[in-house]
Image 1 (cartoon, rainbow, N blue to C red):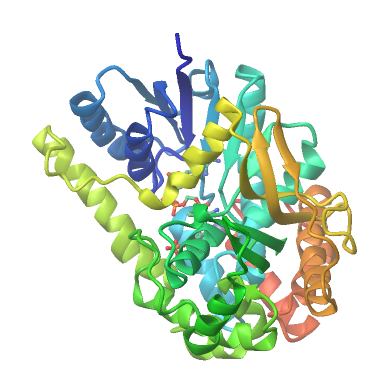
Image 2: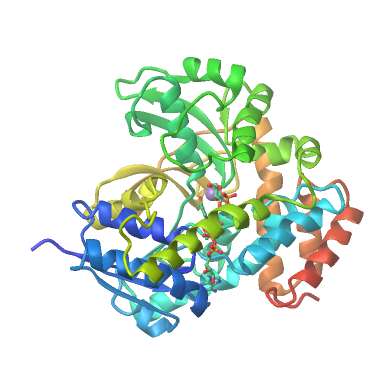
Length: 443
Ligand code: NAD
Ligand code: G6P
Ligand code: MN
């Protein structure tokens, strides 16, 4: 009989949980599931999401066992996969990550610059704790992590849990590849073969071919030079709000800096920080938009489903953009050897770059994990930028492990988004005050 899998979603109270839960049901033909559990450390938040999902599951997949809990032993016993998307500090802290740097006219962003550093200092402990629960109660399980900031979390798990079965992945390259496929008239990114190097939220495509080996770069470059990613459709309902549309258009200016490669949109925070600051309302940042839209909509839908006692016409939809998570689980479960971008220790895959850096590169994924695909040497421009940014990420992890104020000050100072050590210190002192509940004490 075909093996069926048991999955726990850690961060059961996440805005993404219903969409991912429904997506899993949609893909049961290739990734059969016997049990879905939700785990969170915030019982009430999770309960709203879980009770609504429970109703949906009873109506649509009664054969799948379902449970939700805040008890680690119950959550992590008898699981094959942990899908981890936690947000330590919730949106209230994302708002502070974005607004505190803006007080000093510095980029305020969830994963980039001082905001990303602050979020990293909160996330490391949460993700390590979940990894430890998994290893204690289901030592053969795999953790698929997409909790942010993925670059810092990945470096922390490399340092602190080097032998753990964790794979770190991001959805931004997936969306951008869908857009590029659309530019050249292909139905899916899966019809392309890509070369890519970088760090998470900090990378470049250097090769894009179709299945027959034809070079697609010239056609994609024409679109990038004219409109960035703005004139392409991606086919999912993710990244559709105005602020994202502006990000896709701004990629034109990132592309202009190096017309040999196609950039990840996140580079705008490092290469055009003055533009980003000018275009950010310091009193109403992305966190506010998400709280007013996605978070409100998801929780309202859940409450309505619970009140009516049925999920029929309840507005729940599978999160098509998250299909990459099923692909990743399938690659491990079924040894599909699918090529995917993962965040992994470099170990020479980028020849002229720090071997111990966590880099984002294409890998082949199967039952025993991943094999890196070498990307050769990278140009001086990208190498310089990446060396600076990877040092920021490493210093944050140093600061978290040793409780060092000095290292964190260095990390913030080194971020390309920050103009001086003086401003870095002002931001750091504000962040320490705001994060008292979450950060290790710094000396
Ligand atoms: P959310 O705040 O809606 O949900 C996060 C949940 O995690 C909350 O219910 C919270 O209580 C829970 N949580 C926090 N700390 C925890 C801990 N220590 N143990 C267990 N549960 C904990 O957040 P969201 O917007 O849905 O995002 C979830 C995560 O997914 C974030 O880290 C976000 O950045 C990430 N994300 C990553 C990608 C990617 O490309 N890698 C894409 C989308 C979202
Ligand atoms: C992209 C990134 C994620 C990030 C998300 C933020 O998908 O890859 O890492 O979490 O954007 O989106 P949001 O809608 O929360 O601003
Ligand atoms: Mn990401």
